[in-house]
Length: 133
Image (cartoon, rainbow, N blue to C red; front, side):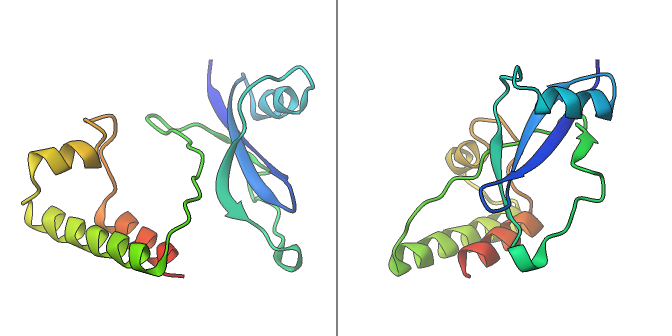
């Protein structure tokens, strides 16, 4: 049975997603709206401002791609000094990935012991930009 990601907005347009087994997008939407639905809704990190609200072009339901997972965003409070250390570490990671010179112990941390492939260079750039806001 195909799986669908269903997105809802909540709490001043903070977006959440869940994965639903359904035959069609309409079935997925109906199940996710049901009071009987017990699936887990995960915060995506996307927030729409009231004066900049856009309805999803795909109406909030799309097929789950092969190998795709959704994860909840974490919020971590850091000092300016800690932020700078995180950014430095991320830039060093980028340099190591570009040269292929990353220590096995660090690669294990980066991939959570091969639980995932880790971020690519573009995603690390995006993370650095988000941290630096």
